[in-house]
Amino acid sequence: MHITLYRKYRPSTFDEVAGETDIIRTIKNSLREDKMSHAYLFTGPRGVGKTTTARLIAKGLNCITNGVTDTPCNTCENCIDISKNKFIDLIEIDAASNRGIDEIRSLKDKINYQPAKGRKKVYIIDEVHMLTKEAFNALLKTLEEPPSHVIFILATTEPDKILETIISRCQRYDFKPVSYKESSEHLKGIAKLENIVIDNESYKVIYEKSGGSMRDAISIFEKLISSCYGESITLEKTEKILGVIPEKKLNEFLEIVTKNDVVVGIEFLDNLWNDSVNVEEFLKSFAYFLKNQIIANKSPFSLDKSIKIIEEIFEVMGKFKYEEDKRLLGYVVLHKITVLENQNNNSITKEKIVEKVVEKIVYIEKESEASSDNSKTPTPPIKKEKTIEITLDDAINRWSEIVKESKRRKMPLISFLSTAKPIKVIDSVLHIGFYAENRFHKESMEKNHYNEVFLGVLKDMFGGVVLVSYDLLNDHNKVIEEESDFVGKVVDFFEGELI
Ligand SMILES: Nc1ncnc2c1ncn2[C@@H]1O[C@H](COP(=O)(O)OP(=O)(O)OP(=O)(O)O)[C@@H](O)[C@H]1O
Ligand SMILES: [Mg+2]
Ligand SMILES: [Zn+2]
Image: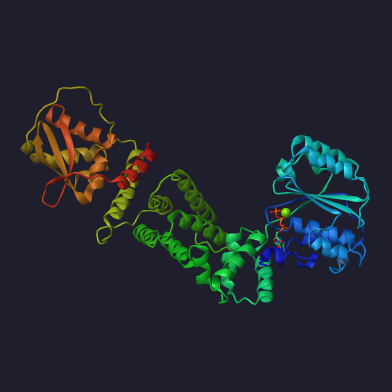
């Protein structure tokens, strides 16, 4: 029969419990001196040894060979029955599935009977915070005056939900997540017994994935064992099997961020994307990675900046929760966590979309600079006025003047308009053309707060409202029509942020 490793290796003595040393020491002392309390409350995250320790207490109280002991023999009938979880005087109630008053009532009814085979009846109530209010109250009564042959061990992952009146009647022990050292040492013990060859790096990955739960660490380890078919377990295989982001990549990204290299950063993110790495997962891993760097005092940034970066990542992830194109997340995070001073885009060739985003980022930077000084010209309101008709020649002749004045009124307009030109006037509408690679500029111009300024300039120069259309051109100067969701989303995001 297949038996899961974490069951197989549930500690059968106190010394096999990884971590929680203070708790284990105190409990061992109480057992040795036969001075156990009548009620305990074990709190802590999942899979760190609460139930395990509770069962060990049951053994320590009921071992036939050694009497009440901190070193149960594990060979007497009672010890064996407890290991097999079929000892009659060990009663485990899972409050998560038996929330009701009935269970606690029947517990109250039977509690006065003497133990059948052992010295003490041990009641373990798991997930005790799940009991209904009535059940809680019934339990409280029992806890007030339990018979001397009974001990209660209440366990919970959510101590905040437990009434103070219950807590005050129990001796409380807060179990903590296991540390990396405790986890890896415990796993090494199992590896030795199971004849598994595994490298040290893999233990790190397992630990990260386990989040400090020993049960999860053992389960993950087991998954690796069964996926490696008796071959040795290496970091590379581990990362692949568990689908975790290779640490190499995280280091690479860290370096990019350290160097403020947005352009390389965007290329890096695009490569991840092309390698079908989930960008959101990557950023999340990066946040944890950075957290660990902070803890190990290895972060290249100040504590403030390190935390700020982590903060930004989670904030952007929240904002983009429903965004399908997760690349966007990467770009925005990158923008937020880098300082964009030394950007020089001229010499770089990269995917068009990447270009657009980098440009946008730079403009946003300029824009916010411009709006933070007070010399900004207020946008003239566009009233319902008579439209006038201008000729294409009018527009072409005064184009540089138009661009210059637009720039004076709103800084980013220079960047958008410098790649544009008047191409035709049809039905009184002046068409301004942008080449396809400057789609982003066109879409920016279509945004209200840029468009309005531009129309204001035209109106003042030509003495009336000019109707305008922004068009995309192909290489042969022909107008093309095409939708780009992605760029639109980038723009929207930044716009939303600016307003
Ligand atoms: N501290 C530990 N040392 C060694 N093994 C542990 C430890 N904690 C958990 N384990 C392993 O994980 C399994 C589950 O542990 P246990 O049932 O004690 O966790 P728990 O804290 O009660 O979790 P839950 O809150 O989910 O009930 C055990 O069988 C054991 O293999
Ligand atoms: Mg448990
Ligand atoms: Zn025994």
